[in-house]
Image (cartoon, rainbow, N blue to C red; front, side, top):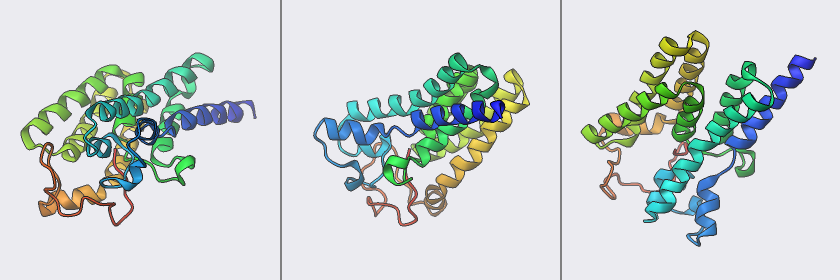
Length: 213
C-alpha cells in the first residue's frame, strides 16, 4: 500500500507539472489572445511563433521543457530516485493531456526533451544536436523531432541502462503517434518548413485533433 501511494504521489507531482499550459498562459498574459484561436489552434511554441512573438515562443519552449525537468528533479528530491521514471512519464502525459484544457494539449517534444535532460543529460544533448542538424538540413521541425527521438533513447541505454532507455522509447512511440498528421504531411510533401509562412494550405486546427509541441 505504501509503495502504491508513493507511485501515485510521484505521478500526481509529475502530471501537475506537465499539465501547466505555458503557451496559453504567456500569450494571454501578454495580450496576444487565446492561442487556441490562432494559427493551428495548438498550444505549443511552434504555434506561439505564428503570432510573431519570438520571445514568447522561446519562453513557451523553455517552460514546456523545464516542467518535465522540474517534475523529475522534484520527485527525486522529495521521494527518491526509484520513482523518477514515473514522474517523467506523468509530466509527459500531463503535457499531452492537461485536465485544464479538456485533455487537449501539445505534442510533447519540449517536455520529452526536459524529461530526458533530468534523467540522462547527454541523451538530451544528443537529441538537441540531432534536431539542429536535421532541421538545418531539411527545415522540417517535425521531422527533426521525430529523428532525434529515435537517437536519444539509444544514448540513454548506453549510459544509464535499459529501464531509462525503454521508458524513453515508449515516450518516442507516443510522440510519433501524436505527430501522425505531421508524418502524413511529410509523406505528401505538404508539411510546413521552418521560416516559410503559409507553405501548407491549412494554417488552421488540424482535422484529426492532433496538437503541436
